[in-house]
Length: 220
Ligand code: GLN
Picture 1 (cartoon, rainbow, N blue to C red):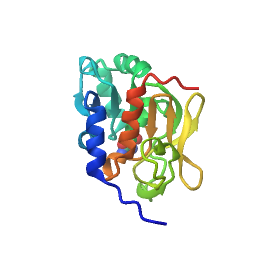
Picture 2: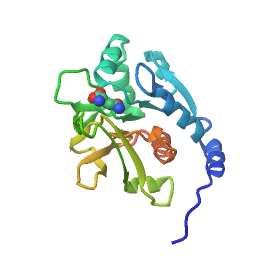
Picture 3: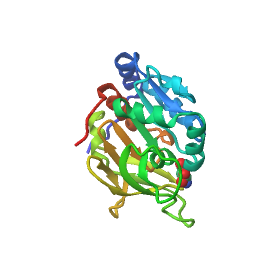
């Protein structure tokens, strides 16, 4: 098979033309938000850090980064963000990575503030101490919406949750080779247990921008 040589410059120029009118927010209360901002800039969209409800005005979508989901949730409560974030998710794209995915879930098996906007159940720190970080190539067919080359996506897991159950209208987006679920989508909402912002691969961020442009996308 011929090797497919991606042309990042061409992709970036394309993204610049298509998305330059779009601004994506990154929840910047806690955790690894900066890496998402860097990736969004590479993809060619506007970026804004979100700390207060008014920071959501005019955004096309919001990324909730990895970090520590209990701390993030408590800060969101303190900053008056819970209801504004829930309302935002009704109409706009939202993507949680790792702690962000936990925060978007309906059930994390413990008492902690959750947005509950995605019909998924998660188990925090599901991989235990022995393998609290690992990397693996995953097949994620949905990404062909933004890049026709179906190469695997290199997924980085850091004290990651598992998505234990996905209930309609949420759908499974990616699984580990043993079948356990690590990414889900519900219309314009996304949850990944891993960290695409720590790779060099822009496809997940481009996929999110693609959803943001089309939101609201009703699931089910
Ligand atoms: N272990 C963290 C939590 O449960 C998530 C880790 C991460 O976001 N990298 O909140």
